[in-house]
Length: 376
Image: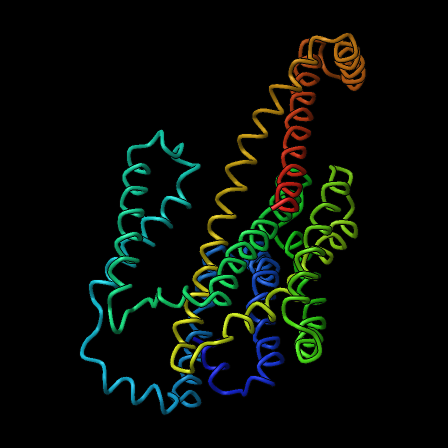
């Protein structure tokens, strides 16, 4: 709705800068959040990550009542509405709710190996397909699916879906890698993400001004190319010896291209739409981005778990080699000299080598995920 308000408030020639400033919150907040959340979790309790929303929400509510007004066309539209589309709203809630649970719990419950997940997939498909059919024939739909007949809007929405997948999956990958394999605290891992957000704070207003000088499609093309290149660079740089500064620089390079996508995609999505359609358009574009975030997060967490298992089985084949036995013997000898018994030293050596094997298998799966993002 905030995006729709900006579209109603600013003329077309000023929307680029307005959407750029709005993009600072939409893009930077998910990157700054892990640092704040990590600091709260490390110093207080994870529950305060939720409690902190109470005063912020109260302030937002007060500001909305004080500052936000409906535009004239929306006031006239309300008078013409015969009633609320309860059937469409119910189908939307049912379909999206079931889909969200599937994406959140699928890996944990072994996807289609679970009757619960399989049932929810059927519910989600039936609900969303029924929603599309029902809303297509409604005069005042809760979701205006007829907007997809506009090629600019349809293309922008599809790209927002892809952007959500790439942006949020990479946001999940980096702190997960740093915390699970490299021993970072939640706050320190969050600081890596926040560095990219700080750079985008500077880049977004610049992109907003560029929209008045260059066509949106040229900026979008540049954004996708640089995003693919940055993810490919990540494939080459990620390993278990990566320093904090290297991880931070990688995140900066991953995040800068997003600024060249968010603003022109938003502008392109409104081309050819009447003012009365801005609310519906804003809702659908953000919905597509949020669904992309959920799908991307679910996909990468599932693939990391399964590819780690695969690479672990491949690396385990080398445990019968002479070099592996020599490494175990050497490590056992050093542990024995440190004061352990021979049996305890052997057990410790095997445990450490197994931990190293697991870490190497996992980091290879992370590299594959960045490669997959760069290809898509």
